Length: 244
Image 1 (tube, rainbow, N blue to C red):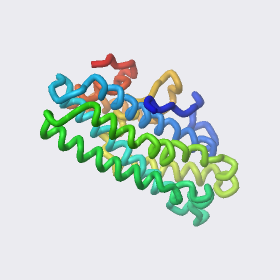
Image 2 (image 1 turned 135 degrees about the vertical axis):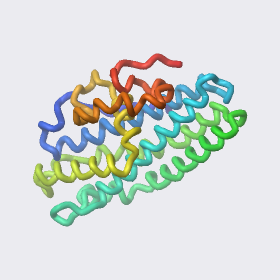
Image 3 (image 1 turned 60 degrees about the vertical axis):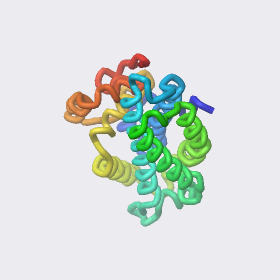
Image 4 (image 1 turned 135 degrees about the horizontal axis):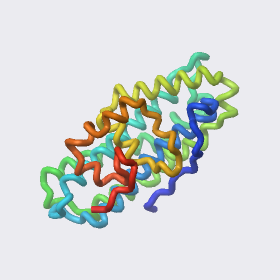
């Protein structure tokens, strides 16, 4: 039931932590960002109830951002957990098939595709949009998100990773995955999504973005500032956004 509960995190600097322990929290922070996005869409669907709302267009754009970030994260998880490491063993195998044997993630991708098509249709024909229908769609995704993405966190146990990877090997794998996300995803969405869906009171260290990346975020969000105004936090100032 929405709102989905956030996962517990730590306020430590993950870059100073053993990477085999930090991996769980790297995943947790990103999944919390996605959870905030889903919760936010669900909440707004209760007030933006039809296509006549003044923020309807921006809300459809925000839906697309959250959906795209979820899809990117699923694809990134798939690559990370199924790509053999330096020891030729996949993390998925170490975790007992927690990723590949999970049927919910495949169903979740189907639901994300349905969400994409519905938003595209509503955007073209605003008079067909109903907030109740959007909420119903998200209700149908709830168990899939929890069992297909969130519960995976509990399988990422540092002691299992430590038996198979050195801290340096794990850090290299994490770095490679971050580079993949930045190159395969739309960085114009990825960076501001992370900053606008993270509560800085839980950690001032995440997301770890290079100074030049932070300086670029204002330009990244300028064209679609009205869309980013729907996010939980301001992507540049990190302050809470007022509800529209």
